[in-house]
Structures are given as structure tokens and as C-alpha cells.
Length: 187
Image (cartoon, rainbow, N blue to C red; front, side):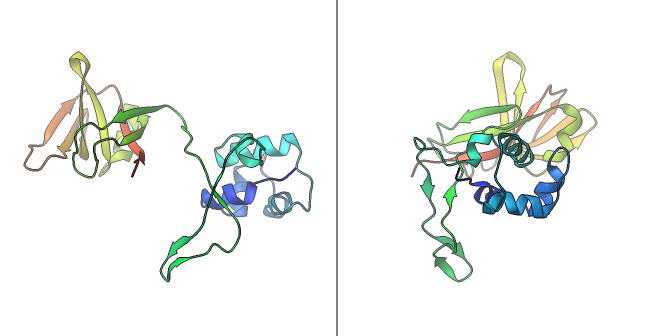
């Protein structure tokens, strides 16, 4: 079986040690290294453990005959666009946790018409972790506010809309917020 453990680990920017520590139960970096290089045979149990540690599905860690991968042709580095050192592929976007979506019909700030935005849903106790990030906030009567979270004060959110010259919004008692995690843009 051909695995993509190394590619996925690198794409997630995790070290061997970090993956080993995230496994349940924890293992050693050497074991993860042997599994990703093929020195040690990868069982279904190991695939599931490593996939959970990386936050992907087990299917993302193996090469499937019917899946079309996007090969990385070049890496944009400080030296310019260079060929990758090893053959690698891009990971498809995968929703994680409770995700919600936002479709952009009219350009606002950095977002263009036709963009799809993936947002991670946060509960009130985690609102402060989204400071200085773009968020979506539900409002009464099926309306929403979208902008940059600039302050969290007890049960009030201070939101700066993305339109130039717009006034700051103060929203009280939001049930949840969606924090921008990924932007999908067709060019």
C-alpha cells in the first residue's frame, strides 16, 4: 500500500514528534517515520491513529486509484518559484468541526464576487480567540453581520464592517460566530 502520510504531515506543517504526540495512545517519532517511509508496514489501525492525529480521514493518507490528486509543480520560496524536492500533492479542503459557509455575491474588503468562504463555528466562551479575524455573526430575523472582530467585552462584540467608511457595530448576546478559515476562489 502506498501511503501519503509524509505529504499530509508536511502539508499540515507538523513534525514527526508532533504527530507521534497527537496519536492516541502517543507513540514515538521514529515509529511515525518508519510508517511514512515504508520501512514498517502500515495497518488499518495505524492509518486511523495517524489520520486522527493529523485531523484528516484515513483515505487521505493512502493513494487511491480513482482519486485525482493535484501535483505540486513548484514551490514559491524566497528564491522564487522552484521545483519541489519530492513529488507531492495538494490536500483537498476538508471541513473540520462545525463549519458554516458564506457565498460572496458583491465584493467587500478582500473578498471578491464568486468567492466561497469556509468558517469555523465558535461558541461564546471562545469568541476572544477570534480577535482581529473576519467573522460572521447571526442577528435577529435571519440577518447576519460580517466584518473584522476588533473587541470582545463581556457579552458584546465590536465588529468593524469591511466596507470603507462603515461604522463599527456592537452586537450583544451572539449565540455563535463563524471565523474565516478558508477562502475558495476561482480565478
